[in-house]
Amino acid sequence: MSWFQRKAKGINTPTELKREAPDGLWHQCSECKQVMHTREHKNNAYTCLHCNYHDKIGSEAYFKILFDEGEYQELDSEMRSADPLEFVDTKAYPERIVTTEKKSGLKDAVRTAHGNMHGKKITISCMDFGFIGGSMGSVVGEKIARGMDHALKTKTPFLMISKSGGARMMEAGYSLMQMAKTSAKIAQLDEAKVPYISLMTDPTTGGVTASFAMLGDFNISEPGALIGFAGPRIIKETIGKDLPKGFQTAEFVQDHGFLDFIVDRKDLKDKLASLLNMIKK
Image (cartoon, rainbow, N blue to C red; front, side):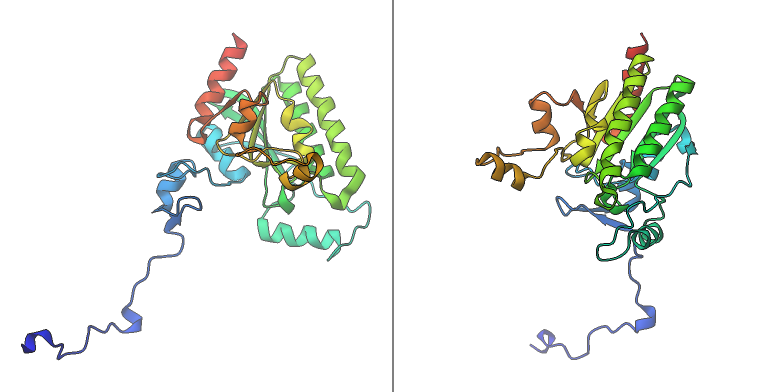
């Protein structure tokens, strides 16, 4: 019965000949844990092929998805935050800005661009959560306001893509003033009959929700996005009751009348184009 016994050692491959999958070749869904090729994930608008979970993406990815051929012209790309309050927490605010710029490759938490979407001109402001949690500071408010000015000047629809943890504490009152500034600009869009569409993505919270994110002619969202003002714990402590299942998800918010519709990211460009065509008619 010697054939049951291993007489020779197992196969040994020298370290220099071992091959591993290159970094970034595969993507694992953070929701269902299924694995897919990174290229397939990207081609599927960064949504899971298995469970349709919508991964968090930044402004560059949204611009590539929405603008024809991924081509656009950015507005106010070099605008940076100042430090009017000389704020210091664990580090000085200017130091935090520089560190975040290097880490994220962004100048602040929003970018604005204009270009064509299905052949029609549109202006888009898109927030980036990767820059201090997508927090709303003076630069965020100013860049959104200037984007709306561009939409007013060119009579092009304006799309706001929100992804934020709320107002930026390092700028205190200056940050909260951006709520009034952007709301006033939205009123000007309304008066000029320039369409304003607000797209809420995961997460949209705090002062952003309380201002421009909920003031669209159409308020829409991606599936499963977290949308709310205060956190669930604070609300629960305030009202003294347990919160319903799925509280603050896009689906819950839509069921209670605060969203017009939820759109899958893969269909976003077509749905937006159809919506704008309907408005013009």
